[in-house]
Image (cartoon, rainbow, N blue to C red; front, top):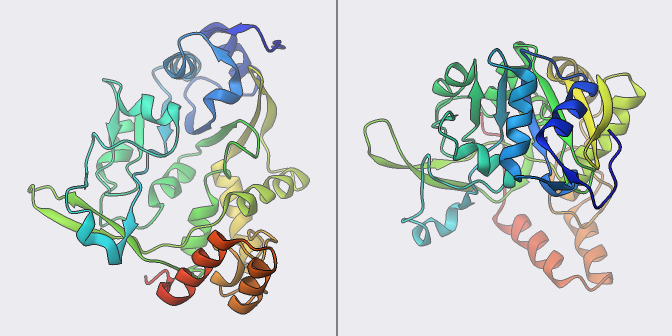
Length: 306
C-alpha cells in the first residue's frame, strides 16, 4: 500500500503490506525491523507486532534477536553487577524490546543470545537454547523448520538476512577480536561468567550480500511495509547458499574499508594487514579508528575456539 510521509500507518495497513510481501498464516518469522523506517505507526512497536501476529495467526511464530550487549573480558571486574536475565534490554531496537515485554513472550536463557519468541513454536525454540548451545544454533534450527527472514528497513537500518552468522560459525571462520562476555545466573541461581566464542561481521559487509542474493534468486519476495523496504528470504535457502559461497570465498562478506576493525586484518581471509589498516587510518587522521585497530591487534585473539 502506497503511503505519503504524513500519513498515519495503521495495524490493518501493515497487515495488508505483509500479506502482499508473501507472509502467510503459519509462517515462522525471524524479524529484522526498523520501526522508524516504516513511518508514523499508530501505536508504535506494539502495533507492528500485532499486525505480524494477525497475519501469521496462532499457527505462526515470531522471533526477535533480543541479544544482550557483552563487555570486554579484561574489564569484567567492572561489570560484576551487570547480570544478564529475562529483564535485560536488548540493543536490537524498539520492536525487539517491545516483544520482550509482552506477556506471551518466551525468552531463551542463553546469556547473550537471548532470543525472544511469540507463538506456536516459541516455547520449543527458546527452552532448549542455553549457554551450552552452539553459537547461532537457534537460527540454524529455524532454518531447518522452513522459517522466513523478514527485513523491514533499508541497508542503513537493518543488517543481514539472519543466516550469515550461522554459516560463519559452522565453517569455523576465524576472526581476531577482543574477547567479550557477560555474567548470568544458571538454572540453580548461581552467578557465572559466559565468554563469547564466535566470530562476527560488519553491517556493510553483511548487507553487501543482499545484492548477491538478489542476483542469484535467493530473495523470496520484495515490497513495502509502510514507507520501508521489505525483503523476505527463506532461511534454509540463504544458509545453504552462504555455506557454498563462503567455502569458495571466505572473504565475500567483508567490507572494502581497510580501517574497519570488524573486517580489515581481523579475518584470516582478509587481504589487509594491520599495518595497512593502521597507515590508512593514520593518513585520514581517524584517531578513534587508530585506537580501535590497535586495541584489537594487541588485545585480540582469533575466534572461534570450538
